Image (cartoon, rainbow, N blue to C red; front, side, top):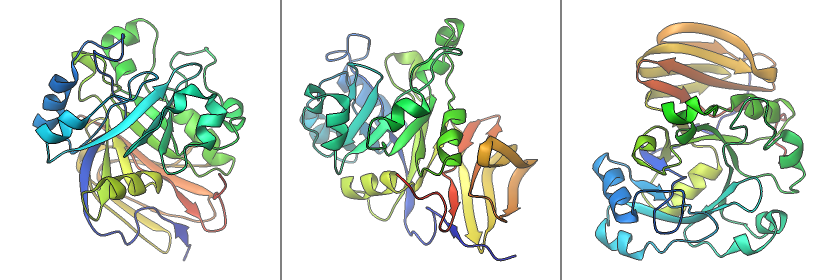
Length: 298
């Protein structure tokens, strides 16, 4: 059966580079304990090529870091914190935190915008589908895994790190929105807990932001993708290490589940399909593919 899918990974040459789009520094975020220069050194040492600094309601100066680590891309940003939180990220970011969140989003053309930790505690209302939709302009993505809330200390306080149920609610209702994983770096325990692998044709700020806004990346807590192929609706995923893999469709329904390194699924009439896996090295979340003509609304 031949099915045509809108596939964010199709026919894009290049290579995968590691990115964290959510992190804080001691000088500008009272909730953080690690200085910017130390954090930059830590990310550099593990091979991260992209680091966004998103201190609360302030745009942190990154010029010294750019000169110190010329092989890294440093992105400006901030975490809007005057109400439910949202990330604004770009090459240069104006002080949009001075506006209402609705006005800030309207003025954020060209920036990468991501809903933060949308449902951090069970049975607690924070971000909801209705609240996000009421913003007027839909953000580019949702943080579907937050490493800060996944630490043992935060879990003991009742926090949860994974928010794929809200993601599936948006996808099921026809919205094209991407899923991000970030360590939300505040302190040493958060470091390296979650990140994104972005597929770029060249290592530049413009290429990174374009790929992130177009869904050409995957989210992970350590499990790595070896290969993703799709042709006429036939999807083949290969992981670097073994795990339990699931193809998921509308309503968050598990369409197929198996263990191993290789997974295949033939799309039929599903409005969207996405793949996730869980193994000894962590979790992985691929971006959704949409049936052509379905699921393109913003």
